Image 1 (cartoon, one colour):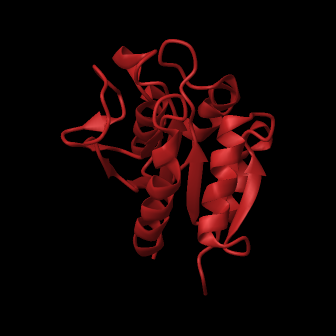
Image 2 (cartoon, helix red, strand yellow):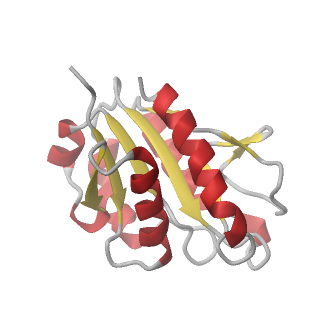
Length: 169
């Protein structure tokens, strides 16, 4: 039986939606199912084994409000046997003190519920002061900076999806 993978992002965003679509294309449209983050619920999480979550950092290092609304339900779930890869958009020049914090915030919640966070990426090639997504020399997901490094996005996604294809097994 093959494991089912969902990509969860807000269908009402511009940049996160475009990045999500690039990730879907890199996987192959039939391999992942898109789910609107504003409509995610426990039943959705119970249907899938693997998840790719979009966690853009809002304001000064916060989760988007649609994740805030779902976190209480998430915290009551047992996520063992489920794998999560998290990507997020951030601006390392405009917000260097909390670059892609939402990735780290969401990763911590998932790990506290027993989920396994995969898809770590190196911090090299990024310039920022601090990030809740950083652990040692890695991020606990894939940071995307469309403001300052848009030219690197496609290659970062390609490499990350290749990595996820191995780690989701």
